[in-house]
Image (tube, one colour):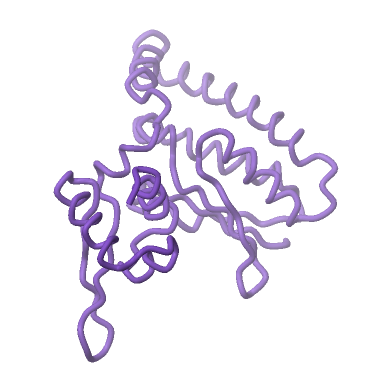
Amino acid sequence: MSETTVDRILFRLKTRGPESIADLSAAFGVTSEAVRQLLVKLEAEGLVAFEDQRAGRGRPKRLWRLTETGHARFPDRHADLSLSLLDAVRAEFGEAGLDRLIARREAEQRQAYLRATDGAGSLEERVARLADLRHREGYMAEWWREEDGALLLIENHCPICAAAASCQNLCRSELTVFREALGSDATVERVDHVLAGGRRCAYRVTAA
C-alpha cells in the first residue's frame, strides 16, 4: 500500500470516525490483510488505536480510530502563535479588549459569510455554500440531508481548536454568525462540539 493510501485512510478516519478493517478494505479496494498490516504499523507509531464494540451475541466488532497524535497530523493554523497573540491581547488590553477583538473578527466573518450565501435560492444551497467556504478555511467541512429532512453541517477538523479552547467566545461568535448567514428562516443548533469532547463540530439546520 502506498503512502497515498496511508494518507487516505487517515483522512477517512478523521472525517468518518471509527471504522472496521472491513469498512476500510471496501472503501479503498484493498485486501483486509493489507489494511490490517497498515493499521498495526500506524498503531505502533501512535497514530491510531482500536476499541472493541459488543452488540448482541457473537464476537465484538473492532473499530479503529485516530489518536490525539493522529488528529495532530492535520493542520491547526499555527496554534502556538494564536495562543501567544491571545495571551498578549489579554495582558495588554484585558478581557474587555479581547472581547472587542473577537467582536471585530465576528463582524468580518459575518460580512464574508453573508456575501457567500447572498442570492442562494434555498436553505440547502445556503448550507452548501457555507460548507464550501468553511472547507476552504481548513475545517474539512461537508454537509448532507438527514432522513427527517434536516440539514447537517459537519466540520471534521478545527484549525483554531487551541485558540478556541483558550477563548471559548470564538466558538460562541461562530454559532451566531452561522445563524445570521443562513437567514431568519433557518434554525441552527450545534449538536456536536470538539471542545465538549466530540470528535468534530456539527450543526443541525432546519427550516424555522
